[in-house]
Structure formats: C-alpha cells, structure tokens
Image (cartoon, rainbow, N blue to C red; front, side):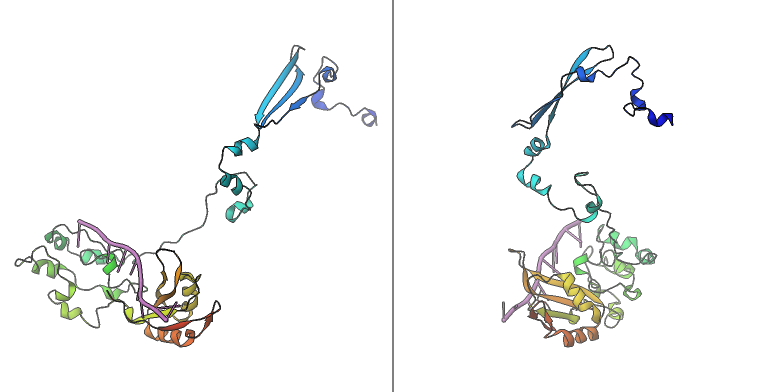
Length: 288
DNA sequence: CATGAGCGA
C-alpha cells in the first residue's frame, strides 16, 4: 500500500508547519544549568517564534530540595514515612493531609423517644430553686445532680425504671420555710421512702472487680476485651500514673450483674495474661 | 506490691 511506503517521519501534528522544513536543528542545543547549592536550576532553550525569529527561553526553577530546606528536619523526615490508613491508596506526595473517613458512632445517654421524662419535669421546680440549669449528661435529668453524681452512671443502659417521682412535690415543698432555694437530696424529699430501696438504684460499686498485676501496656480496651465475655460491663478503668502517664499495673472492671462479676473472678483470677498472672478479686468500695 | 479521676450552677 502507498501509505505504508510513505516515510513515517512526519506526524499529523507537524504537518501544519506549512512554511516548510523543521529548522530546529539550526538552534543551539538546550542547556541545563544546576541545580546549584541553592537548588536553583536553569533551563535555557531556543525556539523560533511565529515570525521566524530565534528566541531564547530561560526557565528558572527551585528544586524540591530547597523547598524542603525551609521545612524542619522532622517534617522532611516524615515525608519518607510509609503511608498508612486511607493514605495508602494515594499517590505518594499527592496530598499532604488526609481527611479520615472513619465513622464514629455516638451513644445516646437515653433512647430516642423517651422524652416524656422531660415532660414530667415541672419547669417551676427549677424556677423556684432559682433558675437551676443542672442537666445530668448521663441520665438527662434536670435539677437533681451533676453527671459526676449520677446514681445511674455505672449502669450499662438507662432503663425505664429509673424515672422516679416527678420533682413537682419537692418543688412545692421546699419553699415552705427557710429552706427556699436550697438543694434537697432525693432521699430527704417528701415521699422519698416510696422510691428508696428496691426501686432506687445506686451506683454499682458492689460489682466492682479489681484487677492487679496487669502488664504496663494493658489498656482499658484490653480489659474490656478480657472481661466482656462474662457479661455486660459498665465500666473499665486502668490506673494511670499522672506523672509518667504509664499504667500503674492495676485497674477495675464494673459489671452490671454481680453474678457475671463473680464468674469473671473465678475464671480470670490466676489467668496468664501478657506474661503475667492476673489477680482478679472483688474491689473494696472506693473511699471518697 | 498494689484500691480509680473528676467536680461546672
């Protein structure tokens, strides 16, 4: 075929140079100077412009090395670290930062739709005490306690049972006398005997298990993993030395059910964990 | 060996 016999030296893009020959060979060769000690690199090349005049083009660039020199040594070092997480998929150097796509599930202190509790609270009760704004973050109750004093804070999940009497009664009772504006603990309120005892739940410190002889790198998630199979765990805690930030080698695990705690003690006391023999026993209640 | 942080109107 005729096409095949044609010299392949011309590509279609070059055909538009209708003024004839490619004269580039008349130009001086391209020169590359540097990069010098400052990282400056110069490229000098020559071209013909539209009018056929010879033009010198100088391109000056600063290399990556110099850009890095303006960063700290540590930052430069980090660039050579292997990528991890989402960045593994990325081209090296394509981005400096990644936005994590990890999903974080937030727990609700109480289930959706249980807002009738709030409806039970008499707004006047807090008003009479002088615009009380206490809202417990654990159980969501207003006016009784702060989160840190919540009687339910060690419970795995808030149950329907913890709705005690609406505070309307004490709201009305408190102002009768000089106690106006003072806090009345639930146990001393009118009609409190009704909710004392079986109905009233206190913090579950009786189900608190002390774990000693933990290795230094045992953390709370490890304890959770270890104890969770025995039943619902309401809290894990590993004592941390405030000065060194290191584990003090003991911790606590609170179970919702005492039976589960007892089974965990039976099984895990003397259990080899991380090259150490765990000691697991009932914790004596914390001194306040 | 050994018994927990935090705490505000």
